[in-house]
Image (cartoon, rainbow, N blue to C red; front, top):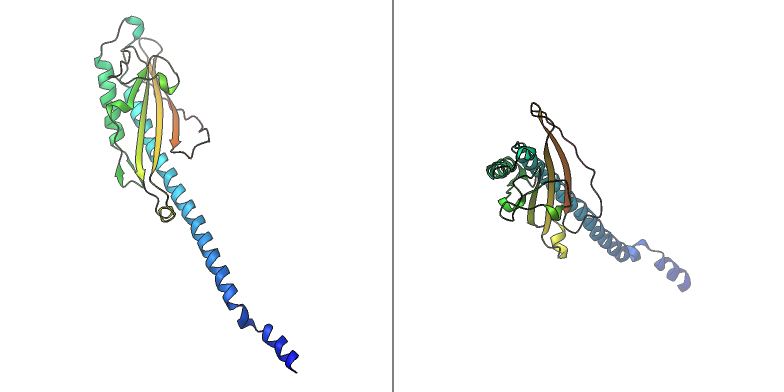
Length: 204
């Protein structure tokens, strides 16, 4: 009789309630973590896309001012200054972080070179860019983007950077202006993926 009572007591569902509560608690933490990663990484990619738009606008606007033909002689410095100003103005019309924060590009973020080359080859005006430059690289950056959810687990602020390169190629004296845009985005330490090139053209 005592043995039968012992078996019934062990099979009572109430004896497992504590174990179920622990499993549910652990699962909730895991689900919260996955949701936080998805939302925070998604936010970073939204910022990257918005910064890319600003960098592309800057590069295209700046390249549109490089109308001097180096083949006719050394170009005046005014062309680079005009390009720099046009690029900064165009980038400043954009916003990031779901269109809530302004995008700021400084003169040091607008760089020039005479040919399509690696990023390290481009120079700002203050850095000694050639007046005969035909290519412009603009870089838009946002720093200190604090994760919404993963900050609970100690994740710090992230940096998102995007850059765009554009060129104004003089094809003949009567028809100038093929603007070619190549984008180079980067998100903090998250990028191991090479982005596809984006091409845009404008005839003048």
